[in-house]
Amino acid sequence: MEVEQIESRSWIEGRIKEEEINKFLENGKDFIPDAEIEEKLAANRKPDSAYIHDILQKSLAIQTLTPDETAALMHVTDPGVLQAMREAALAVKKKVYDNRIVTFAPLYLGNYCVNNCSYCGFKVSNLDAKRHVLSQEEIRKEVEALAGRIGHKRLILVFGEHPMNDVDYMVESMKTVYAIKVETRHGTGNIRRVNVNAAPLAIAELKRLNQIGIGTYQVFQETYHHETYARVHPAGTLKAHYAWRLYCMHRALEAGIDDVGIGALFGLYDWKFEVMGLLYHAWELERKCGVGPHTVSFPRLEPAFHTSINATSPYKVSNEDFLKLLTVIRLAIPYAGMIITARERPEIRRQALNLGITQMDASTKIGIGAYSSDQAEQTEDIQQFMLGDTRSLEEVIRELAQMGYITSFCTAGYRCGRTGECIMELLRSGKEGKFCKLNAVLTFREWLDDFKSDAAKTMGEHVIEREIQEIRQQMPSIYPKFMEYYERIKRGERDLYF
Image (cartoon, rainbow, N blue to C red; front, side, top):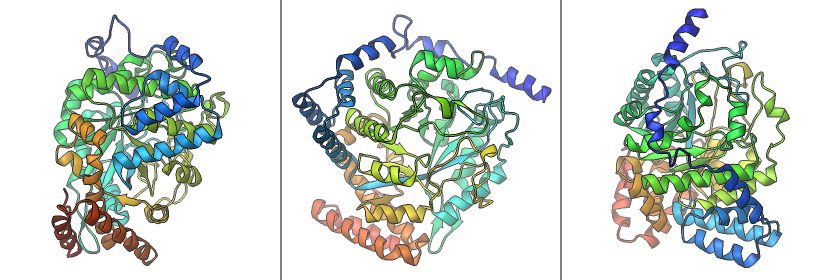
């Protein structure tokens, strides 16, 4: 244990590159002005309905809202106006992303960590946690289960901040995932997009991930409130450096990673402040880097092994407020994808779908090595937190179909160059949603043929038929080529896309 601690301390030294922070600061300050945010929240406590109507029109035009506009939305209490907000949020989602929900799975590669965050079961002081980092062979087994038995095409690899999960390990793990091909009922299963949720990295390290073919690089600030951030991330740890984490998206974009994902852990501080922090983050990326966040995430504080803040925090978010903040985020950052994870219970995820959600995970297991071992029960001493939704991918797909959505396994955008500034324009104009519709049908056809059960067959075929008719009516010039691809997939070809 002592040798391991010495090695960890040696690895920690020099991790933070101050020069890669300072060049982005303005007058030595970061872009989250706590006092200004509080002032705007206070100044917009009583918005009138006419003002809210104008704000909704701006959202429907796919324009990023201002802090004052966003603060006003969060203070709406009138039931009729709230309903108008919810309807506008869904309309925005359909305009930008059409009628699809993208599914993925998280894959935790290890639970070693050098940090000591008060809300996390992986914190270094938790001596009772069972620690393990997956070998490349163990990763292979996990991916074979995910791509060959379940049918996922997208993964988000989750890495702890520890020398055992350094950039060399990250690169090797991504190579392993991309290389795996698994025979399925009629074709081949494989992971086509690897997203990464990891600690902040330096530009040189981020360039290495980009060379391997990273999808989205995802880092959550946890809380944007400076005082709270310092309280829950103990001094002397890597994660205690607020600005190193805050500017990791700037570094990623400079390194050539076009798609970045931001998020906050709701429950650490006032949810209204965190929504404003996400908006300021999006504005900063648009202004400085020319491209906003590809995705926004909003996990809520959940019970975790040997933690207490999860139960005692005065800022825990009610279901009502959670659904409201989702609505506001969709309206405030209308072009961004929105991810709701299996932290939430099925009934909350169901309601959230009609507020503008675009992505959700399914068949989720977050125990280390849990997919290949087919671990049925959650075990708190090997998980970062406890899940609220452990339904299978097929169960989720059936529910989406019942609600009128098509499940998409599409990964075409980043392979066709529809990323970064390019996709921003396509999203704002609604054009990306058309590509998404085509590729959603093609990839859903693959999944139905390779993984469907009898229970899913009728419902899936109905969804396919409806979507094909819409394509024929809405995109007549593309329809013949689309049907050519569709028939080829039915005959066993895979990975055809627009």
